Image 1 (tube, rainbow, N blue to C red):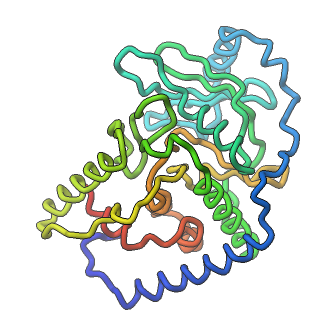
Image 2: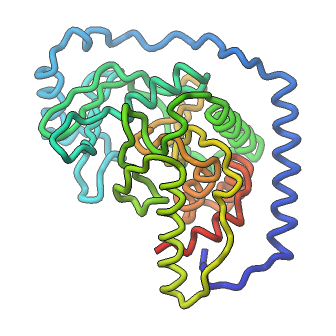
Length: 321
């Protein structure tokens, strides 16, 4: 989206109204049949319990052997082309993540905490984390392998009805995340026993913070927007998207077509929770919009329905520095 284009209010207002009506109808229908008590999960995979008998050294040895043999998962390459995930058995993968603690303290396994948190409070299909191994400044997550295809790989082959069903399911997932009540929700960012560094598209895909409270996060965002507006020689704005933010909600923050899996078991899985944490509700819409900017037009049309149409906030934050 070109942030320097003049706004077309005659187009934006009807668009917001359309999505608001659509989400109202969808939510009303869901609430008629939704049981607030989490359903019993389908039985977890149990075919690779032998891995639980391996010690950390054996797991890491197998992981690096697979990478050296060129058998890492091709979709797991980082910005330098290095593969981060390897399948060590038919049903188990190991994922390597850079630790975020740079003061010599122990790294917090953010992703493992988030995935267990979501599994405990929702019915969203999330892989189990079997173990988190800390070694040489990295965290190695041992977790269930989701056998399926990324949404981006199959989206063009799906019928309109199937696309709508997926969008509705994703909206239901996000609504479940937003319903979670936790004492941790007063601190922005990933789960931990103290404020953690934040990462994601909203933060320029670099570590920012930590932020002790919502006010600190708000000040940082306003500063970034002020820097961006100055760069484009635009006047300061009085708009404050944080003004009506009463509480933060649990947010995936990287819900793109690579991290949504259509499993061969028929379930819709959400993976890669490394950026997740508690943030203002509209952060999910912003991050999905940034991640989906080069995606199919039909997917981009689904995003305001999935995460609510925070179009005004998106335009405001497009000017970040």
